[in-house]
Length: 456
Image (tube, rainbow, N blue to C red; front, side, top):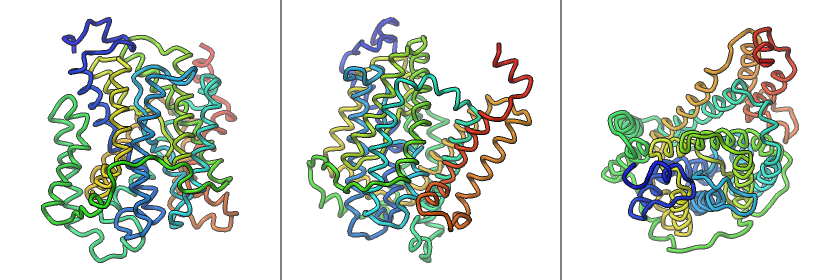
């Protein structure tokens, strides 16, 4: 990358590379995050009952949600790169739909159809406002979320999502799909396995953007094979229009205590994750520490972007860590490169045919890709946990938090007599695990070595 600018220019967020180089660099950012960005909408719609293979008359709502995932990832990225007053870090931070909220969203909508989206959007909007309110204080609350807690939370998110990936690879996620004779058949697993194999070959035997976009390219190969086998129906593309604007409160708005509590709590976790991404991008791209102003601005953009997405039927946004790695890999710190990628996302989000094309991907193909992605989420959590001092105290905190959280995910009937709101929050598994870990970490006395380290 030295040929497109001096070392000082490459480290400068305000510098714009020549367009012939800037445009491909911006598209690289989108290739690295595209699949992860649209997958949460697909998971939520599938859990609600109007997703892939459902034959639901509400299936167009999934296409709309995919559009909003692209559109408001682009809008939130512009808030980060261009900024608006105190909003935005003005760094090359790419925003996308957050996986962290999926364990909260699925119990809220499970089997309830498109009608459940009104309460979900209440959570997205209010959670975004709570996230925004955290911006001035986010640096002071990081002490409550050390690697022990954040690592546990990320592992829990990954473990929750892995079961979704396996169901997709086997041929479906809804009860009627899992009851079908072809569920778990050799063809389904062959398609998913092909995606996994291609993804790993590209990840480890290529370099640069091909390696970074290995999941997307693996899905494309799987999709081509599925087309050759007659597994793809292109009817949705023909019926979709070429241009459509987002509709405010398209799903309605329903006040939900469970949604507000769940989204509010996870906004705290997401805010701390964003602090880490801002620090990583400043260190990896510019060789310096992130300023307090950049951290606050990034958190504001997270919250505002999520709240606005909720108004128009989108899902919560957060900074994407894979794009932080891409900045370090290319050495190009220009925020205007990420801006170009954001414009590309916005254009895609305004063209329903793009969302319709994504909706033609067979669920088995998607399953192969998300098995890899969700496993990487869990692996990222394990990597965070490697920084933990595994003494008796920390092991006990992790043990009870993981046991309660994972247990309630696996056996939701264990709390069937709780009131509706509490039942939804508890069966997410993630919230009770995170709550226990945070409280126990703050309350239980540290062991001698930890106290000495903290004092130093």
